[in-house]
Structure formats: C-alpha cells, structure tokens
Amino acid sequence: MTYKTTIGLEVHAELNTKSKMFCGCKNEPHGSEPNTYICPVCMAHPGTLPVPNEQAIEMVLMFGQAVGAVAATYSEFDRKNYFYPDIPKAYQISQYAFPFLTGGKLEGVELTRVHLEEDTARSQHDKNSGSVVDFNRAGVPLMELVTEPVIHDSKTAGQFARELQLLLRTLNISSANMEKGEMRVEANISVSKEEGVLGTKVEVKNLNSFKVVEAAIEYEVKRQIQTLEKGEELTQETRGWDENKSKTFSQRSKETAKDYRYFPDPDIPKIEVASYAVFSSTRLAEIMPVLPNEIREIYRNLGLTDSSIEVILSNNEIDIYLRKVIDILVNKPEVISLSVNYLTSDVVSIIGDEKYPLTSLNPNHFVELMTLLDENMIGSRVAKDLLVRLFGSDIGPLQIAEKEGLLQVSDSASLQIVINEIIANNETVVQEYRAGKEASLQFLVGQGMKMTKGSANPTMLKDLFIESLK
Image (tube, rainbow, N blue to C red; front, side, top):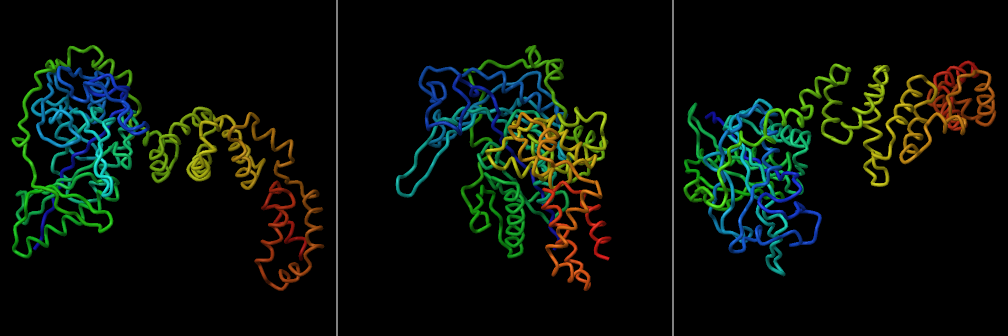
C-alpha cells in the first residue's frame, strides 16, 4: 500500500538583540556564568511589567520582507499557560491570534505565520546532582516560524532548514547555531493512504542538526507506516529523538491550543505596527542586505560554479571576505576564479586554527598573491607557503618573494645548472628513468623544486630534465 507523507516544520530562532524580549537584561544566554543576566522582570517578580523590545520586532519585520510575508497592521502578545521549572511566570509571553507575519515562501515552501515570543530558561539534568536551572536564557527574544504542511520528504525539510539558517545569518538577526540551541527545529509528521487526507500528526521536537532533522523524519515515517500496517492506531503525541539509538521515543500526548488557554497579555498594550516609523518600508529598505538568491546570481554571473557558491554561502566570513576581494579585482575578473579556489580550500583550512583569524589576512595582500600566481610569477607551492605567512603580516607577498628569491625561475640557463647537479647526485634514479621507470622523472623534478624552494617553473623544469636525459 502506498502512503503519502506530509510534513510541517516549526522553527525557533534566538534573535541577536542587545537586550532580552521584555526587559533590559543583556541578551547573553551562552557565554556567561549561570544566572548572571537576570532581573525582577525576567524572573517574574510580583509587580513587574514587560516592555516589548522594538529591535526584535524590527528584525522579524525585516525577515518578513525577505520571504514575502504580509506584515500585520495590528498585533498583540498573548499568555501561553503551562507549568515547567524553566518558565518562571508559569506562562510564556507569545503570540496566538495576531502574529506579526502571515504567509510568505522560502525555498519553495509556503509559510503559515511568524511570531515573536520569549525563550525559556535552560534546564540541566544530572543523575548524581539532580536538576538545575539557568535563567540567563529566560526572556531571550525568540522568533517562531511555522510552515504549511506542504513538505513530503526528509531532504526537502532539511534543505528548507539549511536555507532558513542561511537567511537568518545573512540578515544578521540570528547566529542560528543549532548545536547551541540558537535554532531549534520541530517536525510535524503524518502518513496517510488517502489522497488529500492527513493522518495522525506526531511532533518530533528539538532536532539539533540538519542531519538529525532528516534522520528523525525518515525514522518516524517508517515507524508510522509499520504501525498502521500492523492494524494498530497511531497516537497524536510529542516525541523526542534518541541520537544514540537513532530512533524517536514517546514523551507526552500532544497539547492543543486550548490546552494552553491563550489570552491577550493585559500588561502589554496592543501594537499598531504601521504607526512605528522605525518599522516603515523605507527604514527596512535601508537596512535590508543582499539576500542569498541575489548573491547566488551575482556569483554565477562571475563564473563561479554552484558547488563553490554553496561553500561560500555556508561560511559567512568567507562570503564577506570574497566580496572585498571582488571589489579589488573589478578590473581583473580572470583572477576571481583562482581566488575562490584558494578561499574555499586553503584559506578555509588555515582559519580553522584560531591562531589565523581571517581578519588578519589583508585582502590587498591576498589579491596580490593571487595575481602573482595567475601571472606565473610564483608557483602553487610558493603561493601556499606565502599564504600562511600573510596572516598578520604588514608585508605583501611580492616583497617577501623578491627578498627571499621565491619568484618563479623560467630562465633555462639558470635551471640547467640545477638540473646538472641533480643528475650528477642521483645516478641510480637516472638509470631507472632511462630504463623506462616514469616515476623516476617525477622524483627528479621534485628535487629540482626543492632546490629552488619551489621557485622553478615546473613545466620548464620537466621539459629540461627530459631533454638532458635523452
């Protein structure tokens, strides 16, 4: 029997505001001592009043413009009532009937709504010492996005989450690091044999990587189909993901909206969004960056491959740096492709070491290095060696190469002297080559590159060796 899978995603993203959602506490949930950035408001002391963070609202409206959503003219905050130790008020300030955004589309997936709420505290459990709660995260601005149930496979869901992370980072409204919980994905999954009829919905929560999102969906679809094939009924529930066993597990029955007893928060005035000058379309146009699909088109027009483009876009630091390089190379488009190759391989590898931050590599020095390589003034071995030395250097690559004799030697007379010495010192290898062992030639060329510190023109060096060994 053929089953149709239907998936809807709910994604929470912590926003990069300076302060929390409803108080003036610093928005620093990760890099500080537990319970450092807290106050009577985010700790829900009696008599305190929440005040909405305008920067957070602006970020959500900017996101809405990026995905083509409809911004509300009127919005309000609601109380979502439930008890858990990480909710100090015993309710969460969220949005229900009047979210800031409705509609829109991303990566071909239609969006239902986007709203703002406050994050919960962070609970930590230890079987020896028990459970503790860190309230630094309580009250951090949280953007929640809900898609329409229009996804039908795990790969589409994973790609949507990846594109969402890229957009959040491009807009600079969230770091969206899944491993830190700054972006949390939940999948609502159902299977059905009847076309146009949804099956029993199961929510899988707190999926902390794209790989896990895809794996959890695939497992859950298989589990639901197997359950139905046995003639058993599915339960509408919330499930978690056990990474060690690569399977979902039941957590609790699924709550509905009425279980949370939503009602408008009486302490927060209604929001006439259009009345805020800072939220106007003019203001949003001023702060809106170039979006990922626009960046892709720019890079394609420069001759970059799709695979290189995705590598660049996945690393915001490299993306920003490349744009600086392109600005310098505006009259040398032929060097851009070479620069991309080095940035997405050698440079990415180097900056993996904390001793070599990309900010310490002068873009002008990097462009000069790529130009020397493109014009055959240096070889690739010298270029790679110089690249590492340029991090934190005040001296450009040409100056270093001239001082240390690293500029590529294409003078046959100079190279012949090196070749004669190598032949004289490697009689056995020379005999092996003359006997038909081609690998011996590569050894001799390698010795030549070593003696010249990589400055010899390798093609000329090889040709001269062949001529000399006839």
